[in-house]
Amino acid sequence: MKKLFDELPYLEDERIVLKKIEEKDAKAIREMTESSEVYRYLPTFLFELQYEDIRQMIRELYGDLFYRKESLILGIYLKESLSFCGMAEFYGYKDSIHKVCIGYRLMKEYWGQKLATRAVRLMVDYLYSQTDIEIITASTMIENKASARVLQKNDFIMTAEAVAEDWGYEKAVLADKWFR
Image (cartoon, rainbow, N blue to C red; front, side, top):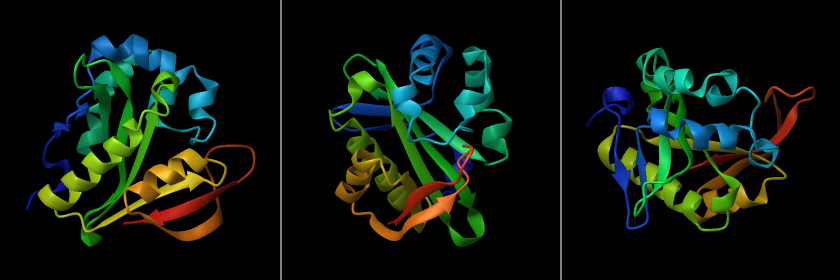
């Protein structure tokens, strides 16, 4: 069984592909990062938000961030056109207990199309069938009902409700904790 950071996976179903992000996706990523609606329920310190130059951010994704096992971020693409739709992230990796957290974000025009549900399903299937991961967790702001539904559709169970966490805002954020 391989470890999570042994490779950059390429995951697909009949509708979407999760794969390495390329510099040609910079314009779409910039559009996504500039959307206050997309990021209103997400931490302020996400990797892509730390860079003025999106092309530099893309180059960094698979450098030290990956090699230090801090985060593995894949693009979410429509399979038919390979149009960039969002990001799927594995973070908070704990090799000693075979645990990882997952996160995702979609460009607004792709909301409501079940793409996040599909992306999470691909992530979970990959983690449990091809890696030694045994525990998968996620966090959602309590206001983010759509993201909670995505996790519920993928058999996640809420294990803690309204936990105060530092998501980089002025005040602590109340987040629900999920487990699968």
